[in-house]
Amino acid sequence: MILSHEIPAASYWSLRLRAGRLLRLTALDGGAVCSTLIFADSDPVDRLNVPDTLKAQMSARIRPPMVLMSDRGTALCSVTGSSLDWHDCLTGHSLDAHVDAPGPSSYATDRNDWRRSARYGFLSELRKHGRGPADLHGCVNFFAKVAIGPDGTFAYEPKHATAGDWVTLRAEQDLLFVCSTAPHPMSQTWMPGAVRAEVEPGELYGPTDPSVTFRPESTRALAAAKAVLA
Amino acid sequence: MTTAVSLPLVESPLQPEAAVLDVTVAAGDGYVGRIPAGGSFRIVDLHGNQAVDTLFYDAENLANRYSAMDTIREQGRAYLTTGSRLLSVDLDLLVTITADTCGRHDTLGGACAQESNVVRYGMHTRHQHACRETFLRYGARVGIGARELGHNINFFMNVPLSPDGSLTFADGLSAPGKYIEVRAARDVLVLISNCPQLNNPCNGWDPTPVRLLGWWSR
Ligand SMILES: [Zn+2]
Image (cartoon, rainbow over all chains, first blue to last red; front, side, top):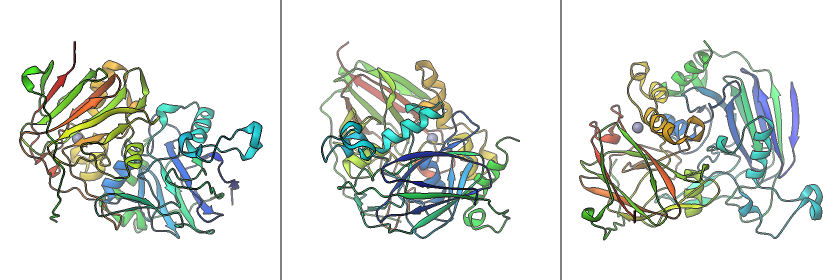
């Protein structure tokens, strides 16, 4: 184990992850959500592109063994495993307007339990890395599910994840993760959960790896990642 | 796969003869322009099944740009049509769709790019023209760079989601003369790529021109 860190409920965090390593996220509470932006660490603009990831793999959700792809058509990371087959990526992250509903909250009144949105957390972490609002892009809400009706309507499923649910991501290039454990923006209650992040040395993989063989598009995105800095 | 969809079609009372903006965007070309608050802006699919990749920005603050995810979450539905309020990343209303004779538009399929074409179709497509090229070329005129390119709308494109969590590119619902019209809630910039994609049916395998019309007081 290279690193183990607990992101408390309704908090935010960032991680630079070396190519080849494995990031394991574990929900420590039922209903936990880990809203996550992913950037190419060594590139000023390349970042997770949710629409490109979905259309290349004909999916409206994130699940193993999908490859998460960037604006510039490279694999950022592969979803190597998960106890859940659905992680939402269609409905964005919470803003202050979503977390203000229970009434005003501030450090002065609530100390470190004051309610902060995922937007607050994202911008706070992005600024630490010299980034800002222009770097906000579609995120993955790990552990969250928003069901899709036959007519394209959305319904949040608050009981999707239980404590112990997990997902593992293999970095295909050096990455910057920006995470928030604020509740999902469609959640009707303020019930944030904590998430543990663990980094392990990854294992070498070959042409029979499930993410490589998933689809020709996945194979090509992984090949592009190998040539990001040729 | 054929799905019977009953779509709400809403026409606009505005007449092309009265428009102050009337431009035709050639196949594979682009456009950037300003729509003043209260102005109406129409995109006409002249020949049918032509994807029009579109982004909106708060004209006073480019970081306050169209957000696909915030827009569809707040309206509770994945597709755009008449009545859809297109929101910015700060949840400000940029434009409202006021007329739609096509019925349904995608905002989750993204824009084609030379690099993502390689992922989807192979290295032989690396040097084909793509929407992201057009977005960057026209965007540069007004200070929109790669970082400012959010997830776009694909007007006239049909990308159905299904309850099992899959996503497909289906045959278009559009036809010659179908149009979409929006009304600006504030001064906005509109950035358009008339999609040059040749490798899938989103343009009916033959990219064609579209017409842009605008109504506002000069
Ligand atoms: Zn295109």
